[in-house]
Image (cartoon, rainbow, N blue to C red; front, side, top):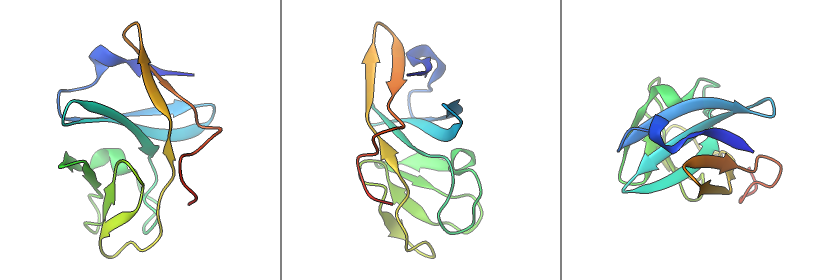
Length: 105
């Protein structure tokens, strides 16, 4: 389903969207586009308010970091992965499949 236009994404950064009622952070990092749950598994706050870099997103509240490809935490205090979703770009539109996460959260 359509999440946003590719042009809505900064060259290295994140846009918060809702896809079928699910909060999703659509992220561009290193030229690739990712879709990850926009809810930190540690503190239940939006990950889209955090920083992006090196294929990770960092939660602004406590500094937990998550791998954009796997959803796994790469830095404490989070210890539980967050869902990542299949994403593809079609004719300038970012499409996200929130019904079929790529990982088990």
